Image 1: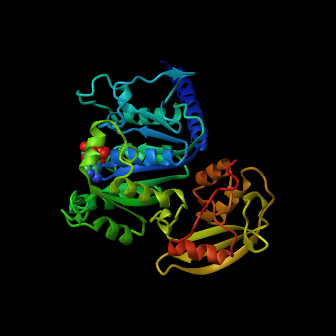
Image 2 (image 1 turned 60 degrees about the horizontal axis):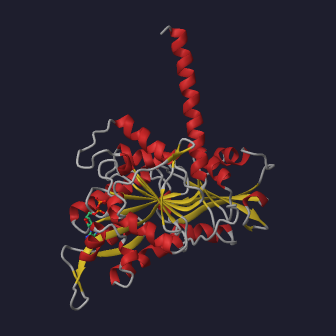
Image 3 (image 1 turned 30 degrees about the horizontal axis):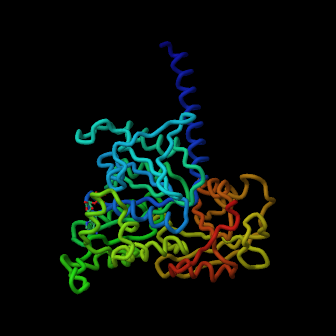
Length: 405
Ligand code: ADP
């Protein structure tokens, strides 16, 4: 190939890559919320949590997609009793397997010829496969996408976190033993490094419920997950005990929460996802630890948070001291003319790294993300000081995104 041909080819490759990035961004914007289920290592019940989380959300009437990109041990098909199924392709896109009214599933396991043979993936092949699964699945409109990520903090979870875009949060699964706790510390640090907000930590296999008296027996030291959550300033979602029925359900391919609805452990599952659904409890750890100064921008109307981002008259720019959790300075600036794409650049130039808003469309959120500004939506009308103080205390309640048409 001549150097001229080589340059032409390179240019075409770049255009192709940019097109694919745009398609991926559009697909991701069709999905309401994304929950990435992570763990520091394998065998802690990450896939079990992902399946039951997705099933519980679907049983609440949410439209849910469950995506299994655990390249080294895709166990979702087994846990759901859909092993050996082949997926169809329509318009060059994968069609997920539909289970019941609200749940759709895609797993890398459907692509493997022989489950008993280990798959040796090269790094770029893994990245390509993960990107294809995020980009080329015909989900339709989803309220939630639950992603069962590969364990650890290596290239694969990094690829998922980077490709999935905004409005994603991590659910970190751990077990009580010290080693697993050290792993989860790495997982939380990983989320902070890639600016992925942590929705919460779940301590799985935490004690055993006595089948006779119903009391919890601690087998290992329990409570480590909760202590760690406090230390790392992320929510603790709860403990799931060791329950032989979970193994029975997993082996028979039936989601536990669906099959054993009346058992105490199924109720625990439902309880621990409540905070994920009801309100997005946002906490300051969503800001990368690398950022030294936190400047929060609040769109205002009449001096209070504006419910519709596009209607704001001015912005409060509030600097905070993360250590003492206090406001250091507040300035109010008039909003510039509303021109497409201007506000994200303008706020970036003003040094904002977080915006807390009532409602904001997905496209605008994507533009802020591109300008390195995190977005929290669904906050209520209040003074900017109150909004920021709640955020700093980790109890900012957020509801529906009123502009999420
Ligand atoms: P991971 O995805 O982290 O590798 P899995 O979800 O595949 O872990 O779970 C590993 C094994 O542990 C499975 O056999 C599963 O049924 C079992 N398991 C998971 N959580 C529990 C629990 N709370 N009680 C009993 N068994 C569990």
